[in-house]
Length: 293
Image (tube, rainbow, N blue to C red; front, side, top):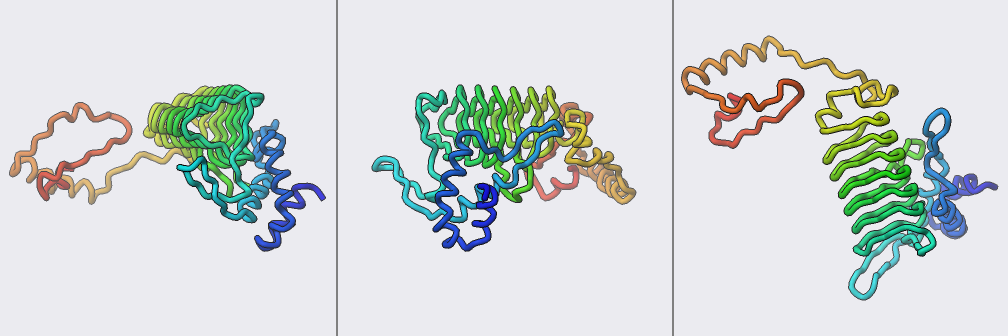
């Protein structure tokens, strides 16, 4: 019976029954993940594909684990499942982990010359290739695939996609740059050498060599996406909004008293962008605020 078949068999049992014969299976599976022999997703000539059995193996580790104390010294106390220990690194691994509260779960592959700045976290099933920087407060979620010489800036969040097992995880290809406070979620594929500037919430594929400057660009400009993405979120770019007759009438009825009775004056409207969206927020001077807005 293959390891994948054994995992499928154990998942059909109750947690108690699966634990009795499954601990050795999970330990063998986790060692293969840590060595990079098993991957949650792999790149083929036809594109990236998910290895469903690998994700099912991680689910088995969660299923049969029991919570146990994990104290660090006499002052720090943690509690986690015994099937999900922290990864043990040696100098021979060639990974630089700067002191300060970082954790890598066993079952994550971290290649040589990866730099981990504190505090950061790499979850089980993740694959982080050589020369990558995982900066302070960055998260590499379960099963995420990170390529060579990628820069994950401070507080970047690379989401984990463990369920459903057939779903593609988040993938960041070689030499991509993920800016500070960026979030990349829900199986997004960021292709090689793409750049995400700071504080972008990315839930859509990004084509190779593209540079995203803002959330507004990500939402309204489909030119940076891969051909498979068809612009934005797998759909054609939505048509521009049009004003209904009721909206126009309400504007006239509201605008006339605002202009001639309350003598409304607008300052600084030259700063509003001519294209794209923007937010107008009232300072709550009076209950009439919503009218001019």
